[in-house]
Amino acid sequence: MQGRLIYLMGPSGSGKDSLLQAARAPLEAHGCRFARRVITRSAESVGEDALGVTPAEFERLEGEGAFALSWRANGLAYGIPREIDDWLSAGQDVLINGSRGHLEAARQRYPQLLAILLQVDEAVLRRRLLARGRETPEQIEQRLARSRGFSTVGGASAATVAQEHICVLDNSGPLPQTVSRLLQLLDEARQCA
Ligand SMILES: Nc1ncnc2c1ncn2[C@@H]1O[C@H](COP(=O)(O)OP(=O)(O)O)[C@@H](O)[C@H]1O
Ligand SMILES: O=P(O)(O)OC[C@H]1O[C@H](OP(=O)(O)OP(=O)(O)O)[C@H](O)[C@@H]1O
Image (cartoon, rainbow, N blue to C red; front, side, top):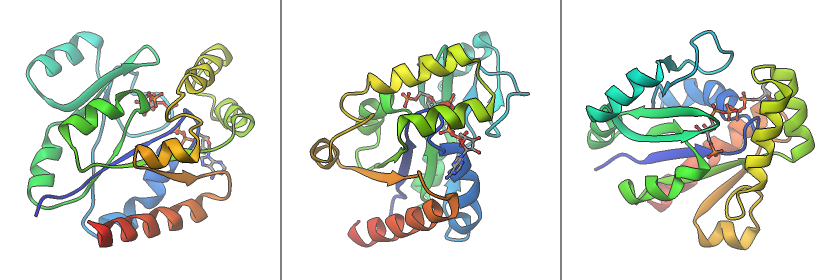
């Protein structure tokens, strides 16, 4: 049986990267794989363990078909390596750090994907982004403005979320609580699959 693509998305600062790190060990114990993203961001940047490449290298890789999914946002290009298709074909679930803007395109390629929207209110987001210190205050405001622009998934209403089959996961509380909820959500999804 084909594995399931778990597409984690949410505003900048909502905690996607922290959650991926914290949930990694328990999920790997269940056979779930994690994709390392390729990003045109310098390797020294704080945060996820991504492969940093130049825009020219990214274009070359994309042209060679190295990515299962790729998109542009925040002035950067992001790619998910094609090896996830081998993992999925081998029946393994794969968790990726996705983009709200690319959800529809991702669904076209992976109709069975499980979309999870990590949510935190804007004041908390701004505080967390400033504390993280990876972006300038101006870039942080641009990211918050980008989130406001997602009328369908960003600050989505419950009805929209239900209609679009998106599971909302709140990360306003302590991270371990969010990890437990994620594991529970994935268990429930497995039972429904
Ligand atoms: N539940 C949480 N409680 C407090 N701080 C958090 C929580 N989740 C994430 N953070 C912090 O918020 C900041 C943004 O988290 P990060 O994982 O980088 O978000 P994203 O990858 O979605 O942009 C980081 O400094 C992180 O340590
Ligand atoms: O369409 P959106 O949902 O806005 O997402 C755009 C991009 O921003 C995030 O990446 P990145 O790691 O650069 O930013 P973040 O860690 O600040 O979320 C996310 O993982 C997407 O790659």
